Length: 309
Image (cartoon, rainbow, N blue to C red; front, side):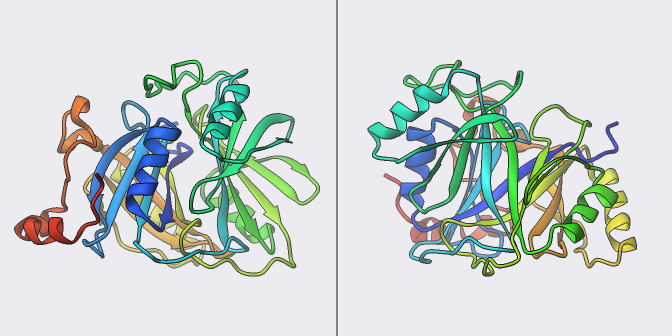
């Protein structure tokens, strides 16, 4: 089954302030800063990777914190909600903890799963969902112990004017199966992996188009084992009549990008070579790592990057 899509690899979002973003995710939510690098196309901007202890695909939320970019607008054509898996019984802990940091939460239930929802400081819509058995290795802090720590992604929700064209991509190309439908909400799943394996779609023909800026998701990435399988999926996407990029080396994985018919930017990314290619596991996120083409101007880049302390 390793030549299949293995659920979500990562999700990339946009923030308005690097230090505030870093502090919220590491100090309030307690996830690990797995990698501190820069945007490949804009090296004066950080690219943060947050995840679990090992930086496992399916736990990685990344950010482009563009200073002062301003507020984005969630709407059609975007991944609008990120669902994190938490252990059953931990929602009370998270409600109390978020309240301590003046973060308002709301209780809800989707497809029978209990959850709380809230926004990060930029307005990114997050959901903590009591998931079934999840054995992923978590990152813990002094205040957030193993029983409450975030496991990684449970699902991601796309908001679209029409569900069918995107459902066709997810099922016919990426190998997901339509699992459930309640009203205008659809859920597809893959059984190739047990976690980070769900995509939800909200269909709303009246919702305005979203606008990418702070508080919105830039793209979602699906996971494959290696770049041989990656290129097999490139042929599948091309055969379906969709445009897709050549293979791109992102230092920690290889990627392809294409825009699905509903407007959401999809990426397919590999497990190899992984986040320990340039830092040992115990030092992940502690050094500023630059793409090799920028090492020669490290001093200049360090001089323009926002201060984090």
